[in-house]
Image (tube, rainbow, N blue to C red; front, side, top):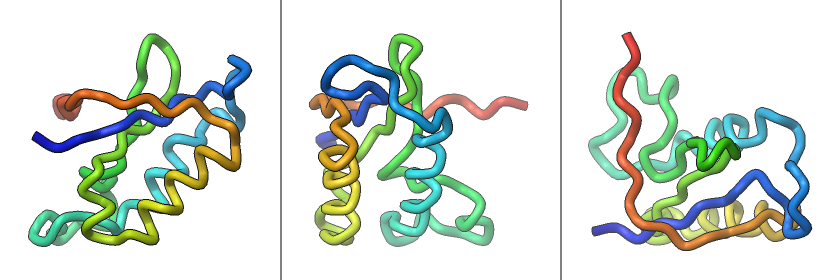
Length: 103
């Protein structure tokens, strides 16, 4: 089972992080970093399975799979440093299933 952590949309002093679409933006930037064979024809239109947005108790968050460190260490460092630079809460996590497709 892969190890993951959450970057919560709350600063270390408990304030909501802005802009409100920060999680989508961060995941969009990281969308090209993915395990081999998971891309496909429309990969550029999908979030990476290694860095994906979610909601936790009504708070926007990003789930980061530690596998990213093996695939692209600089991308992993970028995500970790984003949290540090913006004083965001980072929490170790268990695996979070991807949401079902909404059709």
